[in-house]
Image (spheres, one colour):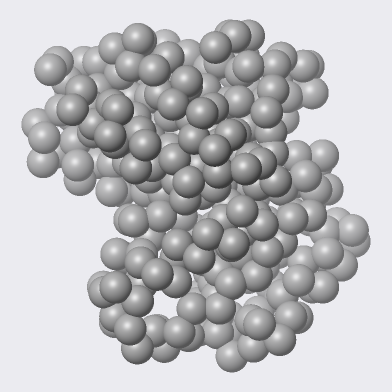
Length: 266
C-alpha cells in the first residue's frame, strides 16, 4: 500500500472535523477525505442497526477512494459500528475508532480513580467507555451522563455565551459527575466548548480532548505501518450526504479554516 494514499474520516455530520483538524495539524503531509453524513444526523438518537448500516455505506465509499486508513470520527458510530467495519473492511485497511485510544490514554495516565464521560444518548447507553476501562483497570469508576442538547447547540453556533453557559452548568452540576477527576468529551463536537467546560471546573478536573488523542494515535499507527506520507500534501476533499449553506458556513468552526463541501449520495 502506498503511503501517498489519503486518510478517510467520517462522522454523522461535521463535528468530526475537529478530529480531522487535529490530524491535519499533527500530520500536515497527509491528504484527508472526509465524509459527513448530514442527511442522517444526529446518530445519537438512531438505532444501532441504522448506525451500522450508514457507517458501512460510508466505509465502502471511503474504500472506493483508495483510503489507506479509515477513522470513525464519531463516538456513537464507534460504539455501534466499529466491529462491523473491521469485519467487512479491516482486511483491506486499518480501521480506527475514537474510543479505544482515549481509554488507553486514561488508563496509562495511572492517576484517575473516578472518570466522567459526557456524550450523546446512544454513546452513553452503550456503556462502552465503562466496559473498556473496566477490562483494563476495574478500580477506575466511570460515571456517564447523556448531554443531548450540547451537539445541536454547538452546531447552531450557541457557545461561549449566556445560553451555552447555562446549558453546560445544568449538565455538569449533575450528581453523576460529582467528585470526578477527569471528564471525557465523548462527542467530537465538544472540543469547541472545552474552554467553557474548563472554566466551569476552575482547574479542578482534567478535560480530555479526544480529538488530540486520536490524532496522535493515528500518527503512531501510520508510523508503525510505515504509511506516513513524506511528500507534499494534496488537496483535501470534504463530502456531505445533504448539503446546505449553513453546514458549509459552520465548517470553519470545526476544522479551523474555510473548506468547500461536496454533495455525495451514498
